[in-house]
Image (tube, rainbow, N blue to C red):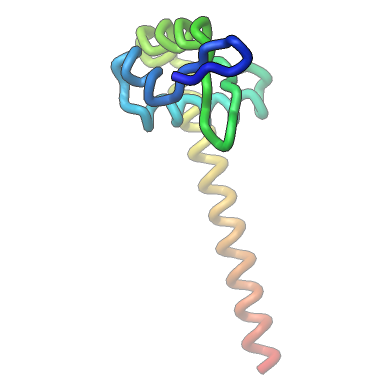
Length: 111
C-alpha cells in the first residue's frame, strides 16, 4: 500500500492478496486488458496508475477487480480475448521468423 497526494494506492501484490489470486494473474489481467482496450476499446479490469513500472490501484479499482475475479471466466469475454491475444502473438512470431530467415539468406549470399 502506498499513499500519494492523500490517496491510498494498492500494489498488484496487495490486490492479489485481497482477491485471492496469484500476483502474476492480476498482472496478466492488466496486460490482457491493455491488449483488449487497444483492439476493442474496453478493459476487463481498471487501468492502474504506473509509478516506476509498478501498478497502483485505488480502493474502488480494487473492488472492481474483486468483482471481475468473482465472475466465472470473466463472462467468456476474457477467454475470447486470451485466444485472440495468443493468435496475434503467434502471427507476430511467425513474421519475425520469416524476416530473420530472409535476412540470413541475404547475408549468406553476400559472403
